[in-house]
Image (cartoon, rainbow, N blue to C red; front, side):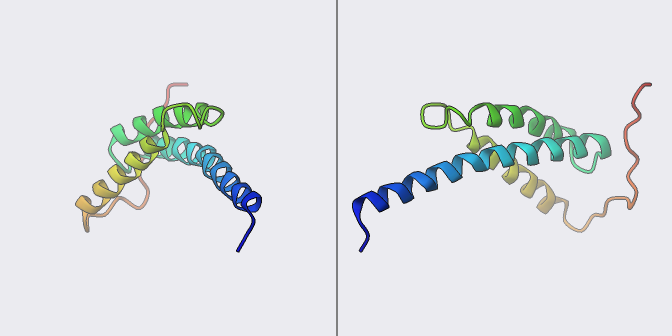
Length: 104
């Protein structure tokens, strides 16, 4: 077996790694939201929800043990994208989607 101290340290390391993964998830959501809004490859509401969820997720990293579980928003976003893509089925997206034009 392992000692109680080692078991406690491993549990603490697991919790820290889980919380630090939220920051990577926030970067992924921000990038995905930007791509979705610029290429319109998925519905716009998915892009906006990703851009709203990303800073919330990043802001709750320091308060992980006492704050709201915002990682569930990331999970909900991933489920929404998965369902959207599954319902889309065999439809294809243009090989070169036209990006939105931005005013100069």
